[in-house]
Length: 191
Length: 280
Image: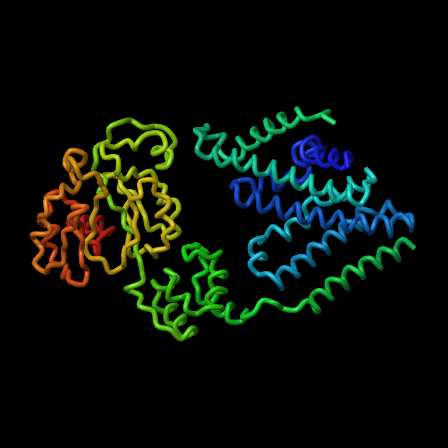
């Protein structure tokens, strides 16, 4: 239990996916202009990460390790994640149209999000147990959502601030990102 | 060996997608009707009907056709061709002139500017900091909050008076601007409105319309007395005129009688500039 809590906190704060590991940086700037879409994106990523972790753990432990082909893991993981997202999208489209429109473009976009591949590879290298990899994925997704929500909140306020003309928009967002990254540095070495 | 396993995994993945595609039943009912309705709707996803986009609205209407009478799509009401198609698809009749709404800004904007404001240029920021920067605390501030939200570009700021003006011809009555105004100046009025009342000054006690703004209502009842068609009723509680558009013949005598210029001809609003250009 203690180990799981350590994994969770480590994933949310200490080894935050965006600010410490630098994974999933495109949505960090791409979808952080408004709070609503940022949180939808975060929830969608958390969802896909968890499902992908479960699937890849099963494949790694029952196919890759017995046949001794772990070195092929990236290729297989990409295949599995792409398939999963496709299945989920098809399933949602057929059963719940409202949810399908709520996820919108984000679900297919996540297929190519490096954060999802990142969590599966981290699970593999750290050799987490089944429960451990699920908790790690949940924590990573939550950390991703947290940073995205923080960034979008700040950027909404920045729109109103009196920034110099040359710094308006993306430049000031980049500076904000570095400051946020520095702030998260403070969590380093907590566990 | 390795290649074999990879191919096997790939095939299995493909097969699973295929199975899901074939086996999972199409649970969304009435999709055909929904798609038919969706094609009629304007597809702007303004959200004014209260549903998540036009598709959500189409889904709800497909389930319960009576819904269209309660919350009609304001954009369809503007468009006779779409309206006819929707009526045909649902087998109902909709009275566009009764249901269609237009936004109206209840302010002439002539209140004097009393402080030099240079903070964040949005009405919301101003109202959080101060009670506006004009003499009248209810005045339109003209800082574009409503202009930016309008999907039809129907609202513009009159640069001379510093007031938002809605062009009824472009306005579709979606109501997105109503919650945007921190002064609560914008109201959706029926499209058939004839006389627009342009003041929102509420306190009655010291009747200071004249003091705050050269064009505010001073509750003099002149419009009430001028009306020959009994189309104006005087509401004693609010001390404001109420207009009956059924009886009004647009003789414009009330507008002439109003010394404060608080009243305007709604049917010609937003077109004053053009009129001026012609006369000049």
